[in-house]
Length: 406
Image 1 (cartoon, rainbow, N blue to C red):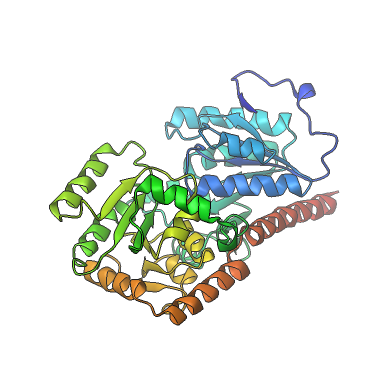
Image 2: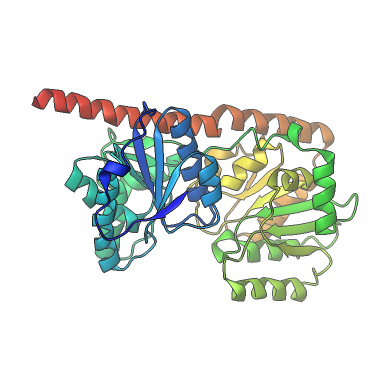
């Protein structure tokens, strides 16, 4: 169910906490529910809150992932949360204050800067707990931009999605260690399980993508964005003319038509028309990973974590990734994957060549090591359990503080 939040007062008598709910009411605030790791994590945490006996609410501008949120048992409230217009952000304070009061919200968890400013003010007005998740190493070139970013470091607890992000937060923002927690993004190992992907699913996807039998597949998942490094991959592929392969870059251009056309022009210029292709978002990524012989993460800027790396490793696939950001924490070089210097097309080509020609026994050992590590350290269940633990922690601290005052 999705509801709009009006500018008039909500009738709180109609929307109190559900009587059957024993757990906390948690409101997560994100810009939209279109696609991406932030949105996926929001939905996964919402599902965990519900499963733990709590009430999960998400406020955003909405999008295709609203259906996933509804299936998780959460309530969606439409809010212009993606806007950076100061007037809209100011009005969102009152809207969020209405939501907090009407739904008896205990914790507000902000996951993006613009809505975090509104959420922080609403929590200050209502006395509710304010938590943030730092998803990226936000750039700043001025004191004003740094101040804009600072709100993500102002939570009672600040969650960093990797040690890389935690180091960035400690270096640039005023966050004491007692408030900072590292909770790495989690992979849904029930979904990304090589034993659960049928041959039929793989055949269907291979047919749809028109993949020739017996030819190695290089897979690059992720939205079409210059920062993801698709142009770098094509430059590397141009250096592999002596071997046979197919490459699929799978991901939506999200309106970046000019960039997609640039990639298509590069494919033509390098003579890769029969080797490389761009596919829109895939509705069966586990099957896509299973079809692949190597998965590429070629981001040119350090990513906070890199969700596709974990997914690919959960499926036992060799990953060749840029040696920076969260990739360093997920990949044990030469054991669970391969790292190359960021932006170095020749090194990427060498890494692809190595991954494609792994001896069968080496590939089997890499498969087992990668799967085991994701399941032990980077699972969705572990991410959710640790996040729920932080919710309980702030609620206990608040209860102690209240008891002390009385």
